[in-house]
Image 1 (cartoon, rainbow, N blue to C red):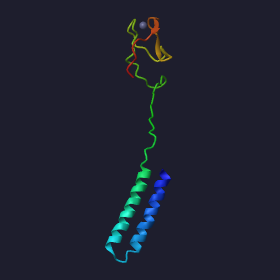
Image 2: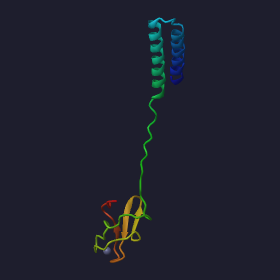
Image 3: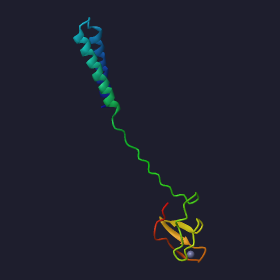
Image 4: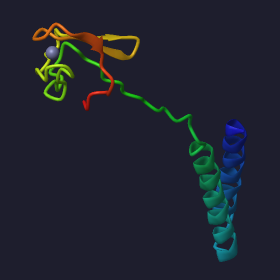
Length: 113
Ligand SMILES: [Zn+2]
């Protein structure tokens, strides 16, 4: 389809120039030639704007080694603020090993990071 459009455009351009070159000063032929060139441009344009497959990039940031906002994670048992060494992510769930009270449990709510 794309190459067909370019082929039609090429033919239109050819006839457009033929009309303009052979116009011999006849305005109607020049107008017709310009219309053909315009149609050719339209064909090229349509061939070019063919929708391309959209690339959706889903960025998932799970970085435990980085500067993760850990102020939100507090021990549900003693309320102590947990650092990155006291939490562990297994299969999407967050497990807490509290260094203050020794509690070990699965975090119920997802932290807001
Ligand atoms: Zn605790």
